[in-house]
Image (tube, rainbow over all chains, first blue to last red; front, side):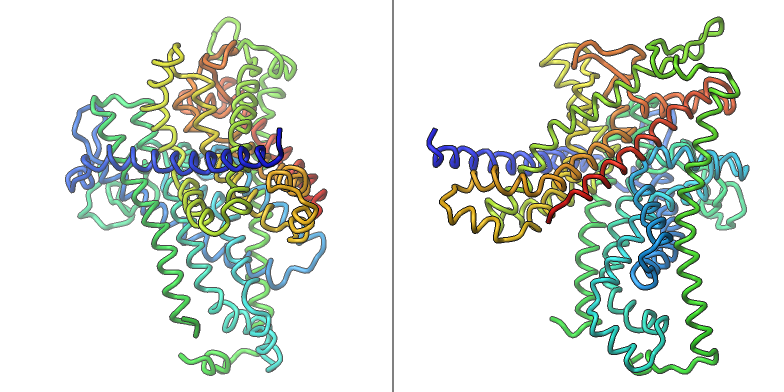
Length: 295
Length: 303
């Protein structure tokens, strides 16, 4: 075969591959949003779910998802930032740095179900908390930490060296330079990375099956005492999140309207992830414009 | 607060103290990462070995027997081979689909249509990463399984369904790393190949792909690591039977799906429960193997 003909055929195949990938995404998003959108209404989004009757909503699950996400970020952002600063600024090539890097790699590659099982041992059984929001958030912290460390390290490394050197040349200490020069300059990328990581945490289910559990007690949204068992704020109560709910109704659900609930919940999940994505880009560029001189 | 205020604000502690304090805070964060990793390994290791050392399950039977019946009161059997094979089968099969698609997409973005191809495919890949795995499973369950039931026959719940769902899930992982690999190749490679009269396809196939091979393999291995550990999406479409599949359209089970299904139904500390932890130990061991493989591949990287 003529090499020019082969080249044409190959080019055509590459176009076909690209088109396939785009079609898959459009198909997936289109299917979910098309099917789920009609189910979305205020009632569905706010009413509690039902375990055997039709017509349940996802109010509690939605709240749980955001609450666990919030707690996870409260733990991961400082730890990830600390780890990232250490790796970008203090780590010298050597055994310790190598060990930390290997650990980050291991943590990042662990399947989320393994992290969920570790959470079951550590935060459910060993601590005696049982299935709890706190256990779920801590398991997700383990799951999210390597991502956060990498985001912070990369953000700090991409800050112009001149800025750091200028600050150090003025006689300002290393830590003070990190705090006052490097962190503000890296802030937009860290924020973008954190929001993207939030999207990942929001959709995670396997790590929560065995830590936050498959049930939610009847919640009383007027009760804001965090120590009360019906209070939504209580961190020691079990909490089923939205992603877990989709899995649970599909595999062990008894409700007759499984399809409707699953369609609606998937649409909410997908739309939330899309919002996290757009927000990350938008906030990233706005903050970047605000705190730097660039247009 | 202006920059000069930020920089020159007087602190009542000495600069050295502040320096030490800051350094120890970040060092502690780094040490927490190490301790979490060690804790996971030790906890899952000891728990996963209990079935063999405390309950007397034979390791040999566990790894080689195809008879899994831990709840049988008279003669419980703990052969995990069908799940080990199931895990490897879906992983390898999905990599066989995702690798050409992902690498092809990467080449499309870097070699065929770098200007607009990247603008379209890049966000597509990012969005595909963001779709939660339960949603993949749900679409698999509500679209793919009925479709397979009607077209290829059987129940629809099958190795094939698991492989299709997984290959879409690992596609973005493969594509994004392969794109990095292709775009970091030195420009001279392409130019010298074109200069001696090679077509674009010849350049890609004979020069660029071999040059980027170690990183491309890393991309595929990372995708496989993800596929091996994926639980819920596969569990929803694979059928979860205890027997070995004889065809690709047969239902099957993987290590992760058996753990997900049975963990909640067994009492903590019982033999049935402990063998599930042994399955998790295999998952843990596999992710270490994947890391070793990736390290080996990246040490062979030329560019």
